[in-house]
Image (cartoon, rainbow, N blue to C red; front, side, top):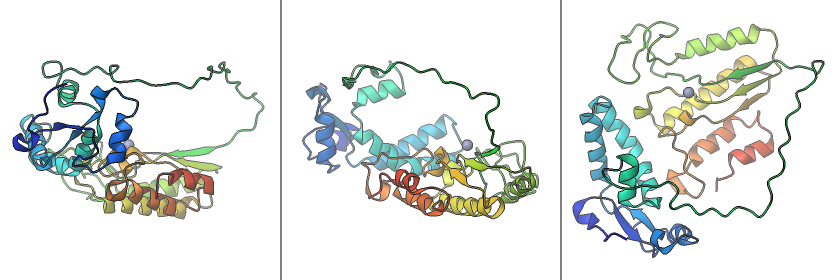
Length: 296
Ligand SMILES: [Zn+2]
């Protein structure tokens, strides 16, 4: 077990002891991590007062390695910083292990199998049952499957599609074959077309409503996308039943879906509440319950 680093003074991630008195103030989580794990792993990565420093470091690495333009790097780091640091702080990985995972063996060692100790239930695996395809005479249904609409709220027809940002090409009136997402009128035109198509029995709508400008999104942006597109589908496809699902782009930051034990402002409640509200006409009560399973 490595000596605890003088983290606060050096501004690096340190490894705290699992005593429940850490700066996170989460004794339950700490003891959960400790339970069933060897004492060596009864530790979490703890942040001291260095979130800002890590953010500045990440932004400059991003810029120096030219992963994106400076403004994109800074905005993205700002957006992801809090969740990243929280996840690291809750992680059972030690600094050397994180370094080995992120940077490679030159900087540390990480073995994905070393810390896992999973107790499986004492139930034999049931024999696999091969699926039986329906007979050719079985009734059929016509379904509409919508996904990844990716509405770009800032789409401006006629602006220059050639840009250095990961998304900014807002070129042709209907869209652009480039780093582009869709303007709202293209999505509406699609729905108008579908409303006149041969009838569907139901709609599957599997998410990813916002655009790919993930470094500049806010919760308000995502909720506007959710409510605007839900209203648009209802307007053009009603009374068809729509079965929506959550896409990875719905969260802020993108892909940020904290587990249910994350409560408070950092939880996913803002999103799941809004979805349960927007989709209550479409989803039956058990599905709405599933959607909000982790909500207080
Ligand atoms: Zn997508």
